[in-house]
Amino acid sequence: MKRRRQLNRHLRKNSEDSKFDDILLKAIDSALSSLGENVRNMLYIQLSQKFLIPKHDIPNRIEDFSEILEKIFGVGARKLEILIMAKLHEKIKGSYEWHGPYWLIPSLTFSQYVELLRLTFENNGKIAEIEVIADAGTQKQEQQM
Image (cartoon, rainbow, N blue to C red; front, side, top):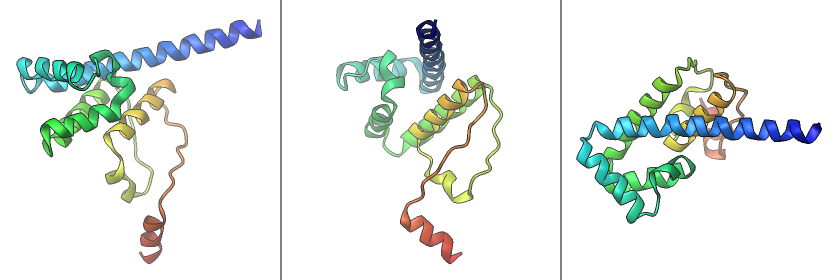
């Protein structure tokens, strides 16, 4: 009985991951479509052939995906990532209110944001307490303020 519950919990977890991955891929697809269908298709071909990341693996390799976008689009990759984040946020339909320190927001990377939304999605839209570890430089900066 206990094994069956553990198996069911594991299957639900994988199912939630799969749902989030599908939503993430749709958000990425939607954002890339804003560049035009030809550019979107060419990007997927480049990801698969040159960088060995097929479309379905993007959610599992989000940091690699972000680095590749930067290689291809340079500084423009950030605007594309912001568009992906907006589309993802829209698809998750979550409501979030920031209660953390103001200085943390700029240091949240694209991949960290995606993982935060993944955790939120898995917890039915509720963000559990998240521990943030600041580096020594940031701590010094706070002490001086």
